[in-house]
Image (cartoon, rainbow, N blue to C red):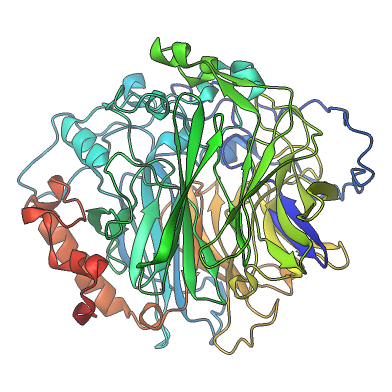
Amino acid sequence: MFESRTGRTRFLTVLLVSAGIGSEGFEASGRPRLRNGKLKTPRRFFVRHATIAENEAPESSHLGATPPDMVAFASGYTTVFEELVCKSCQASQGEVPDDLFGTYFRSGPAMFSAGSILPPKKSLIQPKQPPVLDGEDKTRMVPHPFEGDGAVLGVTFSREGDVTARFRFIRGTPFTYERKKGKRVYTGMDSTRMEGPSAGGGLANDLPLPLYRHNLMPGLNKLRKNTANSRAIYWGKRLFSLWEGGQPHKLDALALSTDGRSMLGGAIKKEADPFGGKMIYDPSKNRALFYAVSHESKDSSIVCYEFDDKFRLIENGRIETTVPGFALITDFAATENYAVFVQPPIATNGMKFLMDKGPGRALKVEDRPSIVHLIPRPESSKQQMSLPLPIDSLSDSNLHFINAYEDGDKVLSWPWGSSLEEYQACASKKSLWRYTIDTQRGSVSKKLMFNDHCFFGGINPAVSMKEHRYIYMNVGALGADVAPPQGIARFDCETAESQVWMPENFEFCGEPMYARRATEDGSNDPGYILSVLYNGKKNESELLILQANKIPSGPIARLPLDIAIPHGLFGCFSTAEEATSWSTEEIERRAKLADKMESKGNMWNEVRSEFSGLGLRFSDMDEYGFDFLF
């Protein structure tokens, strides 16, 4: 995650995958393995470049006095066997603010035993094998929780006072096929975690996306799964769930039913082309930025996309750049002039990929700096730059940006995440760093700002690409020691002070999402923070609402969801006019219609959301410029 100050930038590392999970992934029980039932604290490393004067870490705050309940945490990776079609939510504690309007969406994996959700009882087609509980059939279990089929949570706060929740799986082709078969079919999801802690030169548990043999040799393994489980985004009246490496899935924003895969109106050129799992909002130009990375034998291609507020590519809105080497990129940042990417020093052995050795054995971390690529945006007069980063660990292979901005003509400031410790079987240490790039001198400096173990981070989207003061993030309960994401923190970039709220040791908060007040004036910190809390004792989830400027006070409202939602990934909060007006009745009607269509078999065969013959549906025309539909 990142934060920034005048002439500086800070960013915090978020580990999405491995916190508290053994490197071998799931046991037969369907739960992540723990080391003797205890949380394993990783080894420390020593900074190799003492010439960097700013790398001394602040003292840890040692947040929380009680270690997390790891059994409760592990239970958060359990298959959801029954979806939440539509629920009118009432606060069990506190009151929902009367100036909170909009819709919260979040994606995440939710099926870990393949094909384990039944179709409607009246469906014309029934699966060949019935659903089974996690662990009852090892052949149906995914190797790692992030390889589970994706589902989306939606919670609408309407202007009429309704709060309506729904939670549905994304009916992609792999989901539908495995659901029909009642077994795991897509086995090409190998990740470095399957090979143990030494795989990939020590990266075994830290690569946040599964790596595919398909990355080096397109078409070698057709049975890889687009799980659509990484990030929910709502833009231009369209809801998508993204996934690293494949086409986004378009969803109905009310029912959360699946429309199909989308080529984004032709922006994605080929069906086999990858697409990234991150969107950046540019509030100054009212645009959405995306990226994609593909790999050849000796170089990689980075594609930057820029869309207007109707989700159409702007003029010259698709920029493709070739960089040398294997660019393992899972995140990016952007400023007024640049898209910012970090390429870690990872090399591949193509022959091992060809020989079916898997990514864990074919990747190697080299002893050289990571490279930051500054790619000019459309309409920018800047030139592309590639600069080496200071190193203080094996690699920067698992970064997550919070924000980036420019300060004058000379300095590009951006916050991001960097590992502080050797990669371990359980998880690597993540901390908040500030990076400063001097584009005239071609130099990079870095400073450690917050040494406590921290995860998902974000800011008020109104200050995206601008200097911001506060960042909101998850923190573990053990201060600087590795622990699962559990509490919520606000970090002040001006004072370097943090405020924290920590739930019970069996409760775990997801990504903190900033939600602005209806009367917000665009300042840094007057809104709310939304987070899905998972209770590992009761196996249930609730949505928390906190005041952004009073984090230590805890939730001002708790909304039970009446369902156990697994630990999720990334989401968004939309204040678009339509997203503030959907009533419970309207959502329920749309959901019933979706169920009716599915029971007749319509959703057993995925319809790709693209302009092609009989595959074109009226809901797809908006991607090709038919504004009259709105």
